[in-house]
Length: 77
Image (cartoon, rainbow, N blue to C red; front, top):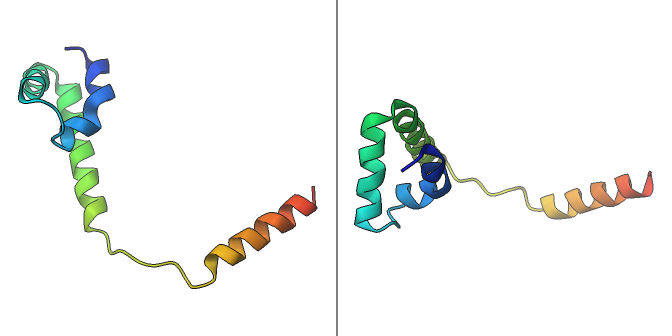
């Protein structure tokens, strides 16, 4: 397995959506490739942080405000 292949299937690997044999290939590659190992670990940590962020709803009229601002900027061009 090459580093480029891991990048192409990284999300599926982290989400546990790959067949076991494919996961084992990735794990074997990461034993020998510190760059991929560090990248996967960093990616997993980033996902964990993102999942633990407080979920907030936007203010009530945010969609209307954004649309109004967008339309105004289009008129000025």
